[in-house]
Amino acid sequence: MTSLPDKGAPSNSSDPCYEGNAAPSSSSSEQKEVCSLKQSKSSILSGVFTSPFAIFESQQDSSTSKSPKSSSGSYGWSRVLRRIVCTGSMWRFLGSSKVLTSSDVWFLGKCYKLLSEESSSDSDSDSGHAAFLEDFSSRIWITYRKGFNAISDSKYTSDVNWGCMVRSSQMLVAQALIFHHLGRSWRKPSQKPYNPEYIRILHMFGDSEACAFSIHNLLQAGKSYGLAAGSWVGPYAMCRAWQTLVRTNKEQPEVVDGNGSFPMALYVVSGDEDGERGGAPVVCIDVAAQLCCDFNKGQSAWSPIVLLVPLVLGLDKINPRYIPLLKETYTFPQSLGILGGKPGTSTYIAGVQDDRALYLDPHEVQMAVDIVADNLDVDVSSYHCSTVRDLALDLIDPSLAIGFYCRDKDDFHDFCSRASELVEKANGAPLFTVVQSVQPSKQRYNQEDVSGSSGDGTVDNINVEDLETGEGEWQIL
Image (cartoon, rainbow, N blue to C red; front, side, top):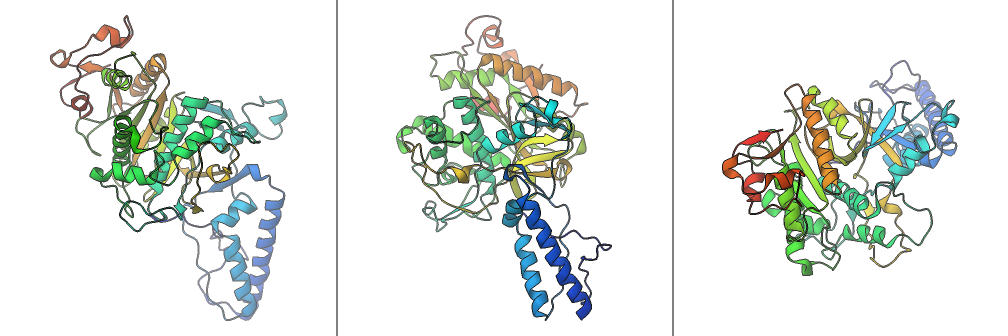
């Protein structure tokens, strides 16, 4: 797994500062030096006058033109300066190369109307640029780390260049925990002490075996699906690793600290056959009901539930017919975003604007930190990011996974209703479908209870593993 490419100068031959492939003359070398210094100065000035809370980066769609070598000392210095300015970290410090347009942004189920500056004074303060940026920077940002204890029996003390899928999945699950414990409207406070629940959530994603949802424990849980230190896996295997880890922590809570239990049911939605190419996934209401019942050990009808839906939406490129459907999933109040990105570079896509994906990028190397669960004054700056990056939706890898969080039974049925409406808009190629149950020969429950017509939704004796792997025939809603 390689890091995202650094920013570079635009390839425009009409620009007097454009560096072509021909060897420069002494006069052109001086011209390049002047232009380079001007560009550096311009970048620095833009960074000074740009609010650090309004930093944006755009994923480059083409490679950067290569600079010719020169024996000139002054030219070499300008080249070094340009290289420093064009690194990803410096771009994040200096300012943006692209800002959001005035189009609406859908971000984890919430719409932000990014009006023009002229009309911003008359707009709702809860739906403008500042409100969106506050929401974005409050999301949990989990990146490459270095300097942690070795993973299992390997020698890896860092996940740089291979752990981006794991980190992206941690971000998605972290948002589910934030929504569950603190609510969708929660925002990171500007002052300490922090909320104990918030600190406890960060602790769970620390980089050690003592932390419930650490990279160490995820790799251990996903061994049978190909997860290993130093290797990259796809979204489907990652979702199954989470399923295994959640089950293990529930059955053996003593393996981690007392805060290691996942506070909701987890449903990995499969197609006709279990695997990455098992057909369109099918959300079965009765499977969800049984998982909730099992989570509560039969004591309650329903529990909060997270749904992970792995998808393969094309071969080498995503099929364009799926893009409008993916965009609409962000309008669901239950949206947790998407594990996706360019091939080989996993990201956490948390929002969309027009035909662009807005994402949090795990390809930032940071030192491992120890977030102690009861330290409410700890430095949490490495878990938040105000840099919004964007990527064309038609460039994302066709292998991805969508997440949803349903707080209760009513919320789950609202999700099913929205998903069924999305199926009707799919023109025969839905992202996933929703069914009530298997055929009568497979039914061992009170359908009326599960559907919400009466009773408490209790379901008995359903073989959840059989249903998850898609055995039997389905009654599509």
